[in-house]
View 1 (cartoon, rainbow, N blue to C red):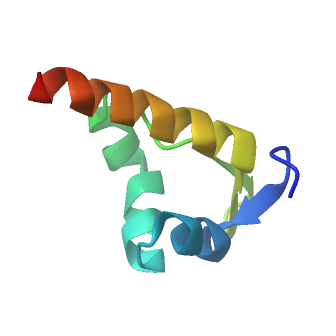
View 2 (spheres, one colour):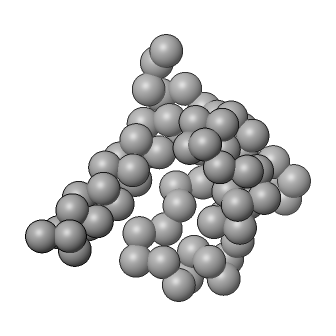
Length: 72
């Protein structure tokens, strides 16, 4: 699969092994404002949010590195 693939919220949730509701919560404006590393979603229109797979992979890497620093 190409990392520039655009994923639906459902596909992103499956990839992250989360529920759609959990991923939608990450995309809410309030959640985005509170997060140090906001979830990389964009809106096509008010009812269609998408995530570029390459952005999702970068986001995961940043969170994993941040988590590793906290453990050490």
